[in-house]
Image 1 (cartoon, helix red, strand yellow):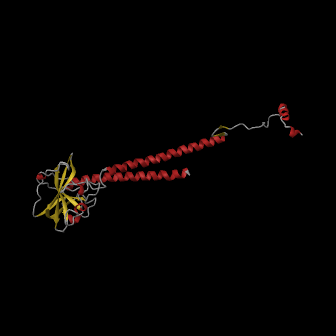
Image 2: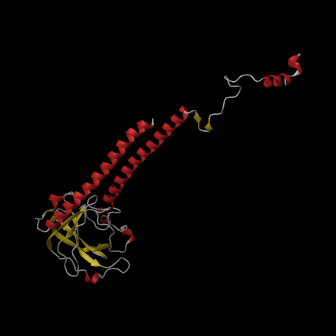
Image 3: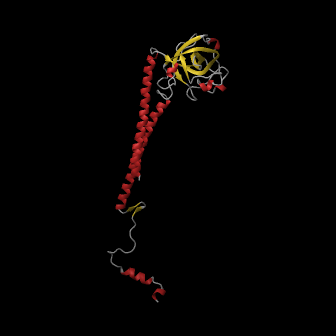
Length: 281
């Protein structure tokens, strides 16, 4: 039975380890491709927003354009966003596009934190009238993907996650399930680089795949080790049995006279004296 388990377990562990390793290598290749795409993103021609939706790992980070009017009454701050080694806010304004939906546009980054609040006086007002915005397309955020908290727990005018689900209760119109980071940041704002799409690049999940690879190969080695120990134990047990040994120690000598030993007269006399009277009657 142990041999059957070993024959099945070792190939399975090796297969799972190889599969996890291939996933890690795929993420490395994707990360390198993203670096190449990012280096040429500024030179690549921007495409209309409708041509890049829905957002996928291929279209995330691509330059998109959208035309419409900014909703100046619903400018929001997204706290706890890092740029380099500093923490600050994204300045988010909704662009009412010609298609009817609104597109969240991150117009730039402003230093500050949620406790001290941002200096809103430094936030430039969005331009009025009809505008065309160009920026990197991003997928909507979810819990744990970049948002810091639920929007209801933040002060008025702040948003925890950039998503249509977070904005649905703040604006009286529908919102795209995507957002863009504007390539031009006015005033004191600093431009925000594109965010790496979820499930790609050298993130924590990539190194988890690498850790799982090592674990599966260790499991395979452990199966081989246990099989060797059990096999050696069976060989030793068979050798002890052949030598007449038992697990408790050497075999006990047989009781009674040995077949090759002559009868002792004294033994016969002792046996005669020990006979009971009832037996001799």
